[in-house]
Amino acid sequence: LAMLDETSQEVRRRLGPLVYGQEDDTLASTVGQLLKNAGKTLATAESCTGGLIAKLLTDIPGSSKYFLQGFITYSNQSKTQLLGVNDDIIGQYGAVSERVAEMMATGCRQKARTDYAISITGIAGPDGGTATKPVGLVYIGLADESGCRVTRHLFGEFLNRTEIRERAATTALNRLRLALLPGRSE
Image 1 (tube, rainbow, N blue to C red):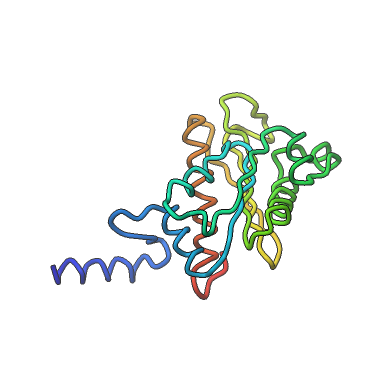
Image 2 (cartoon, rainbow, N blue to C red):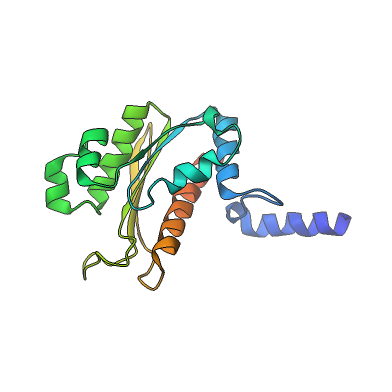
């Protein structure tokens, strides 16, 4: 047992923040624990993931302490009505864009009055992709008191719809996890 503990500590030392848990820990439960420990709250604004992040978080007993609200804004109209995304921005950049992801996250955080908000907008496929916006393109916004940072991801058109959605949700949760780690900002 001592050898196992020693090996575990060495793995954690070498991999650092890549390791998020052990045994039955999931990424969602780890994020939840970090939010709870910090006394912070979260809301989500999801388009292509259709509420998957909210589902992963609410699978954890006691998640109501930190997860306050989820918006599923699949249509452009819902992005505008529920989150305040400007119609002109959608018209100019498209629903799958950095600007829309930013407005979704900041609007979500304001409406839900949370410390953090995650937004996701993308093309999960199998249809809908173009040469400039291929299937698998996802923008993820993370808003907090200091503003909003959006990252662009190409999860690959070789993945199916479910895989793209799962990778997008996992990536978003991991971005929040990294932002919540002491001494780090994603």
